[in-house]
Image (cartoon, rainbow, N blue to C red; front, side, top):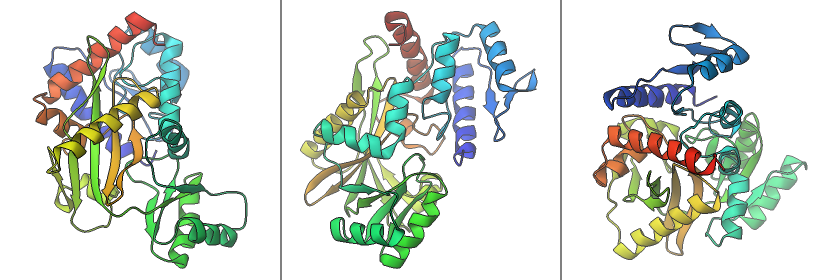
Length: 319
């Protein structure tokens, strides 16, 4: 996917942490052409790789793939077929959260505030642009519905930019336009207790971008382009509300293991933007920073996720 390079960075960090924690981990890389690169086995096709993984009888699989295939439920379906425990959400939760439009529908159904949006329909682009202007106003956000890391996301400041961004985002799949909420960017990481499997919120992070108007791909992975303040310097009641909404989003989308929900806080309140089911686990990622603020180091975090996944499968058979 477009997030292949970020996935490799997360995977390397997780691999190091697993080995440092006493696990014997074997990295498996799904390459851009869909083949599997397995340490000691070379490059394998899908069914060869699945057969090899099944023979290895692993304790657990740690999925560190961001974007399509890794985060949308497909690799989870393969692991279910092999009857292997894996870190993170199952097929249903992954697919729901991966689609920003479907996730927004779930938020609304569960009373979680989220900005108004329109899904691009099979009508002329000019008609849609006019409908967006009328119902959402400009500037507005244009987003492809099934990518993360702020890939395929832009802020349209006028009709021309709106039209251009819709066309550009269509190359990634379905497109939605969302009312632009200008405010402070907050994110809530949620982690499940590996013993009870109950989710709890970690300290809130505020993201202050230095160059761009929102936390885009460049800002996420270049530490010079944003400041990430953890815990966020916000009123205690707002922090508690963000944490409550983060846990509610995790439960509403039927997620497991961990998640991270992004919010905007403006004069009208808090607005949920999206929920990530496999948050970044690189050295500059937000989730490990939130865990560290709670006193959970990266190696302990990775161990908690693995043990929670194994317990979930043992207790629930994955369902």
